[in-house]
Length: 566
Image (cartoon, rainbow, N blue to C red; front, side, top):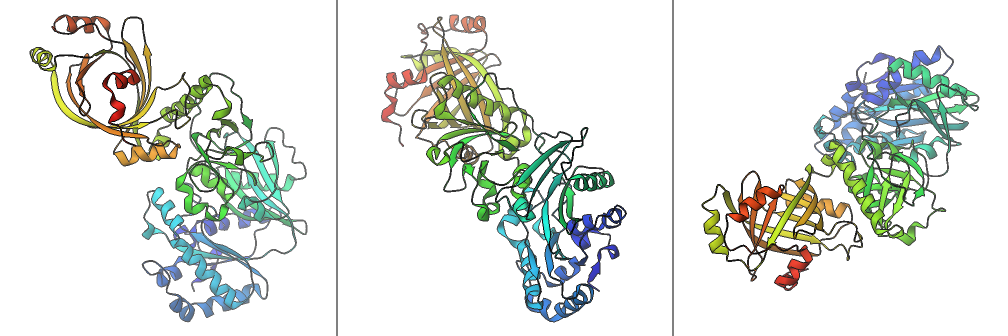
């Protein structure tokens, strides 16, 4: 028989993890007076028999299995209304919850409704958002199987909610309980919910003592923090579901000064930078369109929520995908006013910073805060397809009007390696992007030659006719990923061109003979120690005094604006 009681199966690959987790707690809870709804499981063997390459053989299911399944259900449940729930082999696991991604159905009370609900549960395994998330977890779609959990629809529920036995944002050892008159409000992320945060060392349940006791019993049994869905009907407490809590393992950087901000409730830890997007899923998204949330989760850089709680299905997936999020009142901030403005979201503290409301110095501080967050969290670098991040601080002397051939002949006699490259440059116009003030980066650009890198560069001119370049450099595998990163943080490429470079280098010094199209060659000498630089230039005739030029000044001298195209 392919429809069984929970105590007749003990394999998550046969019953799916949702049913498997519930089967482990039935007898334990009964000993304490708590219940799970009466349940049956349609095993994954039925799915295996009916699955096609990209769908379900509905006629085979209807002719071969539906009558048997319906008869067993009627024998066990009579005329009670049912809940038909997905129980995939990929959901509610210790690695990934997939919460809310698969379909489930309430108030099923006829054979035809049962048939449609089961088929829709099966078909939900092929939804694009599901297959995208499965790929994200580095599993294969072909490994996914679906069991169906059939449960009694408990009538007369007066209160329902979710309890986390550990804070999923801060990892503090405390209970978080969110509840409402309908538990659907809590997990759906819609509507108002009540929230209690309870210190385990000072267990004041505030009328939720049964929920706390049941949660502690289950947490002890599984020996891990749990996400528990519960409900109360006729003074009886039920457990509808339990699964491991999947927490973000990310670290916050240190912000050096107080910066004006709006304060909300942290939902998913992390730091994000980008433009607020209200009308579409992009960059920093105002997340009020839950219908398309799962389909677009990979496009979201950060999320602002204006309703719901921190224990909803959406909140779980934001945390599992390392997407910083904050719950903020739309009464405290007119978000529509700031559509397409740059934001920094702090999902560790609930702080929301709006760029146009802070000083140039504070803009620099906030952007560096985001970059520092990337530096110390390799898994976040992976999300953005960043290979590595380096800080490069170097000095440079610039020489204009040189005799290129004469100087190259002298350098050829020295101990230098050399190569030629054509470098394509993609610039972000900081003024046009309204990104930084004068106390921040002088330029943001992609350089594409022997490797692809984004430079966040600040140029300082000192009194010795040298310039110092303070760079944070993000390396990427290809130009597509570098451009994608800039788009995700809301930056637009405004200029594009190439230049030819002949490079001479040893372990101490790098000489770059740079030529833009139809422009004279100039020389930039990069070095870290002054004495090695002076030793070099003493051995080269034809070098006049170096010039301390910013990139903009070099553009002016060579009239480079004429060659850049938008």
